[in-house]
Length: 270
Image 1 (tube, rainbow, N blue to C red):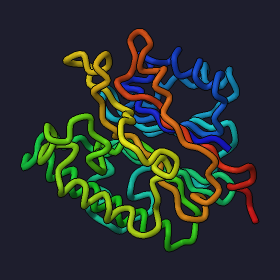
Image 2 (cartoon, rainbow, N blue to C red; image 1 turned 60 degrees about the vertical axis):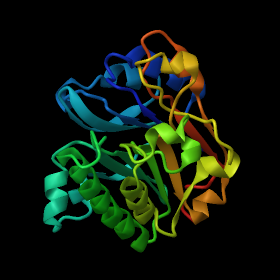
Image 3 (cartoon, rainbow, N blue to C red; image 1 turned 90 degrees about the horizontal axis):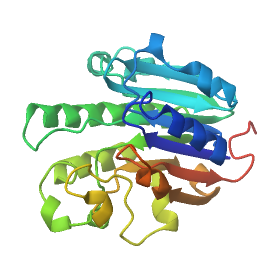
Image 4 (cartoon, helix red, strand yellow; image 1 turned 30 degrees about the vertical axis):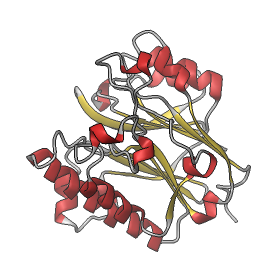
C-alpha cells in the first residue's frame, strides 16, 4: 500500500508531470494540494486514462485539494464541516478549499493544505492558528470514532530545527515560529506520529525549495510536507521517502512528493 502527498502548485500547469508520476510510482492514493482549479474544470480524463479517479474540492486560482485514487473511496468529506457540522468556525474556515478526506477500507485518508500565514503577527497568521485549532478538533473527532488515520499534506510548518536548512535564519519567523509548532503538536496529540522521522531521524531532508535565490541549486530547503499516521498504521510502515527528482524537472512545483509504504492489507477491513 502506497500513499503519497504532493503540493503541485497548479495541477493544470503540472498535469503531465503528475500523470507521469502516477504511471511510474503507482500509488494507491495521491493527495494533491494547491490544485488551483475550479471543480468544473478539473482534468479528470487524463487521470482516468491511467487508471485513477479523483474526488475534489477546488477553487479558481487558489488553494484546492484532491484525492487521486486507484480504488473507490467511501464516505468522502469535504471541508471541516464534513465532520464538524455544528461548529460555526469550521463552516467559515471551510470556505477556503483546504481539506478533503475519504475512507479506503478501514483507513481514513485526510488531505490538508495548511494556510501559509504570511508573517508572524499578521491577520493571516491569526487565521493560520485558528485553522490549526479547527484541524485539531477535526482530528480528535476522527480518532474518537476509532478510524485508523493517515493525515498528509502541505503543513507550511517545519516542526523542528532539523527541518530547516538554516535554523537561525528562520527562528521566530513564519513556517518555524513557536506558536505554529505548538499548534501543530496539539493537532497531533498523542495519537499521530510523523512517519518520515521513523526512517530518517537526521536533518538535511527537505520537501520544499523556494523558487527564489537559487534555493534548489544550493539545496536550501525546508521540510513542510508531512505524513502522519495513527499508531496502528505507524507500526505497519515499511518506508517513507521524499522524491527530490520531481523538483529538478523543468517548470516544477516548488514542492516534492512525499511517499509512505505500508504493509499489504494495512487498510483492509478486519
